Length: 553
Ligand SMILES: Cc1cc2nc3c(=O)[nH]c(=O)nc-3n(C[C@H](O)[C@H](O)[C@H](O)COP(=O)(O)O)c2cc1C
Image 1 (cartoon, helix red, strand yellow):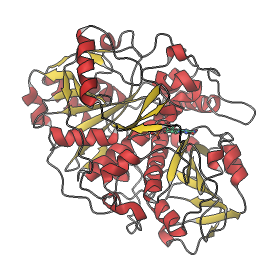
Image 2 (image 1 turned 120 degrees about the vertical axis):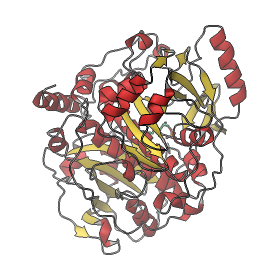
Image 3 (image 1 turned 90 degrees about the vertical axis):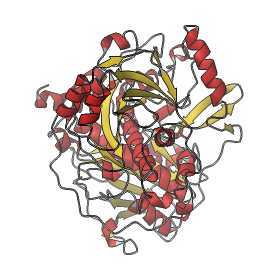
Image 4 (image 1 turned 90 degrees about the horizontal axis):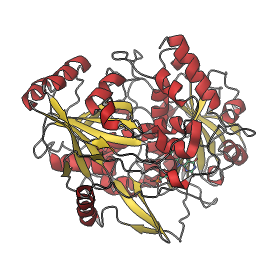
C-alpha cells in the first residue's frame, strides 16, 4: 500500500477506535454468548506431540531477569516444553460455581487470548524438524509442516535455537470489543513477546525479534497463508518471528525461506472454527492491511547506552517459574496500601530498555514509548504526575527532577496533587486506576512513527505491551499486583499534559495491593492434563472438536 494511504488508514482507525467520555468506539454493546470464540485453536489432522511440563521451580531466581542469566540449558524437547509452558502455557484454572476458565502466563485483554504461538525448528533432540503449533490447553505441539528433506533446513539453520512465531486471531477480541479489538491484539502480542523473552532468559537463552522478516515471510513459515487449511476458520494475522536460543542469531529472511521450501514441507491439519457466527467491524481489515510489514525495513535509530543495573526488588529470590505462573491481574485494589519509594523506583528502573536484559534485548529499535505516572500512594513521594521518558522521543512537558531517584531514570515531577480522579476517569472510570499505588499512561509519537511505516502502529503497541508485562512481573516482585488497562479515554492524559496532537496515549496500567475475590477457587494449571489429553484423542478419533472453554472479562 502507498505509504501516505497507509498512514491515513491507520490514523482513521486510531480515531475510530478511540474512546472518549461521551463516545465509546463502536462495539457490540451486548455479548452474544452463543458465538463466544473458543480460546484454544486446533489443527485437526496434524500429529500431536505432548511436551514435558516445565519444572516448577525451575532453579533460576527471578533476579536473573535483571542481571546475570544462568548458563544456557541445552535446547531439546524438555527445554522447549519449559520455554513454551512458562511463556504461553496455562498458569491456573479459576472456578466460580459451574464456570471454569483457564489463565495463562501471558495476560490478555478480556482473557480472550487472540495470540497463537508456533515453533519452527531444524530439529532438536526429541523434536523433529518443521513448523509446530502450540496448544496451551494440552501443553502439546501440532506438527503443521513436516519437511521431507530436513537436512536442507538444517544446513541453512543459523545456530542452536528455534524460531518462535506469533499470530493473532482478531475475531477472538472483536467478539467482545468491536473496533478497538485490533489494538488489544497488538498489546497482547507485546505481552507475549515479553513473556517469551523472560522465560528464555530464565533458561539462559537470548531472544531477538527478527525485524527484517516481512509479514509474508512469517505467514509462509507458519502456514498462515494456506487458505485451504484455514477455509471456514477465522484467519490468523502474522505478528512476528523471534529467534530464541543459547546464542543470538539473525537469519536472513530470503535464505531461510528458500531453505524451508527446499526442505519440501508437507502440511498437515485444518484450523478449527472458533465461533458459529461472526461480525465484521469496520476499519480493522483496512488497518491490518495498512500496517503490514514488508521484508527488510528495519529501524535505523541507535540503541541508547546501557544504564547501570537496576536495583533489587524484595521478590528477586523467588523462583522465576513460580513468578511466571503467579503473575495475575488484580480486579480490585485496597485503596490504602502505600508502596515504599525504593520499590517504586526499582520497578521503574526495570522499564528502561537495557539492550542486555530481557525483554528489551529482543527489540532492535530505540525505545519510543514514554510513561506518565499518576502517583497516589508511594511512601515519601508526593502524589502527582511524574514522567519517565525512557529515552523515547515522545514530546513531554518539562518537569522537576526527583532528587531521590537515580539520575539515569530521568524521573521528573510535572504537577503535585491528588490525581486519583484523572487516573480513574481517564481509565474509563475504572476504580482500580485510583485505588492503586500508581497508574501509568504510555505515550508515543504515533504520527511521527507512522510516517516511517504503517507497521509502527503494531510495533508501538508491542512496546507498550512489553512495558505492561514488566510492570506485571515487577509488581509481583514488589509484593503487589498489576492490571493492564486497555479501556481508557484516549485524549484525557495527553490533554492534561498538553502534548502536541501527534502524540498518543497507547495503554494504561495500574499497580497496587490486590483484593482477592473469595468466591473464586484456584486450581492447578495442568492438574487434569493426562485425562484432558486422553479425552482429546478420543474426541478427535470420533471426528469432533474440543468443547469451548469460557473466558472472563
Ligand atoms: C491489553 C490488555 C488490556 C486489559 N484491559 C483491562 C481493563 O481495561 N480492565 C481490567 O480490569 N482488566 C484489563 N486487563 C486484564 C485482563 O482482564 C486479564 O489479563 C485477563 O483477564 C487474564 O487474567 P490474568 O492477567 O490474571 O491472567 C487487560 C489486559 C491486557 C493484556
